[in-house]
Image (cartoon, rainbow, N blue to C red; front, side, top):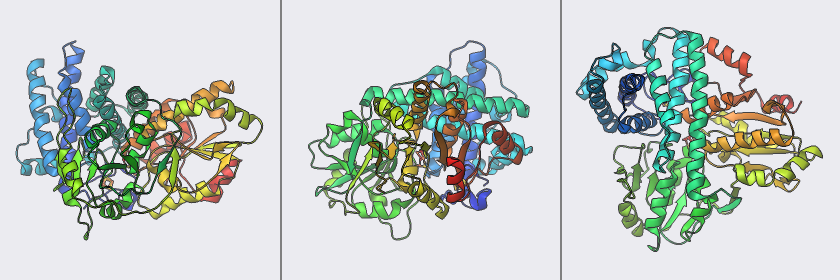
Length: 542
Ligand code: FS2
Ligand code: SF4
């Protein structure tokens, strides 16, 4: 295996024996072959579109779900990945027949049948097959960005929001990575990936707010009640909706975990009296927290952490959608017009004890674009009168590494006349600290999930108008973003497309950036890493 797609890549280079995330050599190999199969499907779909022939809607769904399944911590079930490879080859065959010719690319013609075939073929499908390190680096940026884009597109798709232009772009970009393109052309394609990232994020924003209402400032309980509960984690709001409906009146409470916390901010979910609160902390602490929860845990997406010795919750672990874990029960997709069937979780929950309390108190959030823009006059006034000196976008991901204590320290040491704008699971480093208010505004404004980083960009664009500025970079906003997996890659590319400069990315820059590609990002966009809290604070506030 050779995988360097996330921030925790071994030794800051790549995982080559086993993933730091727990991904095995075989699973990683199967995922490489799945990506290769996706490229084959994409090549035919692109060719059909070029000839103005219809493309089976199954292509968009296949590419979306397959790319999503290869994201860090989404799916640990090798059988699922192997089945997806075969499904891709079948789909590719149908598209090839429709086109009436065979395309001359390895990914358009390769065949694998058994697991042994897949594993033997994997080295020819992996990233190391691309010899030029700059080309490999740009392919990585594009492909990892596409994985993140696919994840967000999948959630929008689940709510009935689709966009064929996005699907066509995914095909075009996947296909382009199988062909010889110059470095400048690949840089252009990387930026175009960011443009489509913005479209996918905006689509998901419309899907979520159109279905569940506009997030509003909300205090979320982090204690527990006395009933049995189901804990739901990940990002998919449609799964949560199905679960809340089916648990109504059953005596079973529903708690959120991790990236599902922001569901509490949506008006449509507030009507459920049994929607009890948020349980536990960041994704990487889940082994202890899921063990303590005592009831069924539903993963709707990443991040899954493999069970540790002593963890006994595999029999109450459920996955659905793109997520998967060997030995856990997978809840199948909903049929058109229907709901997913969560009756097995509900039946199990009834025989489980109430959750063990971990903590007490509340988390404040719900500051997505509409809620913040409702405060726009107050915000503009606070900046103009000098009560607020600067906003710090500290969105992104959390992770296991000790170096991430930087973000908790940074949040705590920011002066009182600053406000943190956050989204994603990065906030678990500081969202339970009492950082107070400034000019009547909470000093931590949580917009929601990592996809709601889009909200932060909308807020910046609106503030640019409110202040009468020409350039978004003239706003008193600094970007100190924490990244971990590939959704953060598409968020980064989306921000670059929107013209945001001088983003600091940590705790380390991606291992897949070659020195030359890193230089391009630094020189053209001012991308930088992080230093010490004190040095960075001085530079940001200068
Ligand atoms: Fe956090 Fe993990 Fe949101 Fe990522 S819970 S790192 O999936 O997408 O951010
Ligand atoms: Fe390593 Fe990250 Fe790849 Fe897992 S996803 S194998 S931790 S680089």
